[in-house]
Length: 254
Image 1 (tube, rainbow, N blue to C red):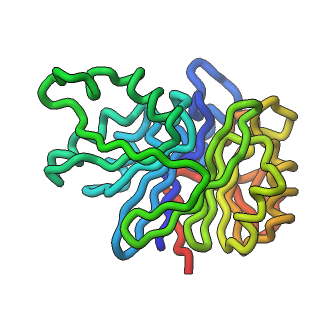
Image 2: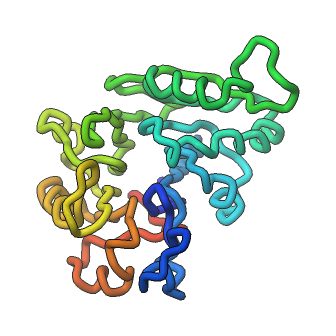
Image 3: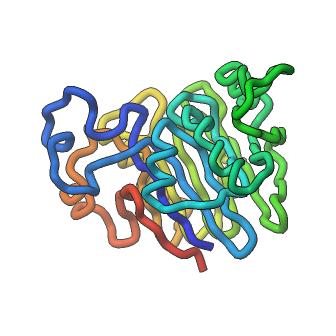
């Protein structure tokens, strides 16, 4: 299974509009962060987790021509705003896109894009087939997906385990019972907003603590703000098996 990290930025992205800090002014491409998303490809399936405002740009950058399904972690705009740009994939495949999310999140999509779900839909709107998921495992084709609960302050969010890979974004708490679903993964992508404490995101030290507890082979940090610091400087402080992710980074889960 190939994993491509499409975006590693927080809700504002990096650089932040109008900001003159050293990270936002950096010339290093690893300090340029689109909104958070990830793509998984195996022999039968191309799957995207979350479609943020930069979804179109990410698809063009990675030269993606096909997606089989989209899975959502939660309903915040920086994770759903790009769904309308699924239309070219509809046209190429001549079928609806399969969408998987909790009922609350599906309702948010309907409220955000009422033109795509009404009885008299305008020609050319996205073609979407909605599938309700919960904390039970589900399958897309033969690919098993195990959702697990994390919390973004008080908002329930889904993390996902697919084989030996686990993905956690927008979280600052994982119940102990849900960690049982994650133990044994070899590759982990987890959010860490900055070094300083935050009400709804893990700090870098908190993410490192969870990585040490779960003990995957490799851990990559995502959903990173400009307050974290320069990619090169922060990475130099981290253990060899833990790195800041960057946009376009890919690796193979064996």
